[in-house]
Image (cartoon, rainbow, N blue to C red; front, top):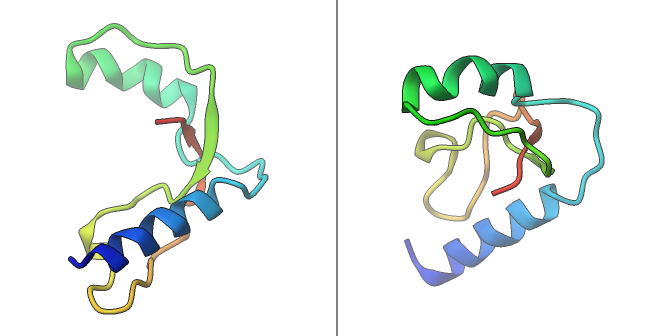
Length: 80
């Protein structure tokens, strides 16, 4: 993808992170239940949350001019 597309994606994600919400895309309970099970790592307690898409992957991004699709799962996610 061209540099302008990546810049647009960074800007869109940075903008979405500024939206205040009570919606949760990922909950601490899900992390507690699945980190060790799937990753074999100790379960972290999340101390920093940000607003995000909730299901961001290539299938939800358009290639020409960037459009981020499928927002029904948006909400708070662990930062980073």
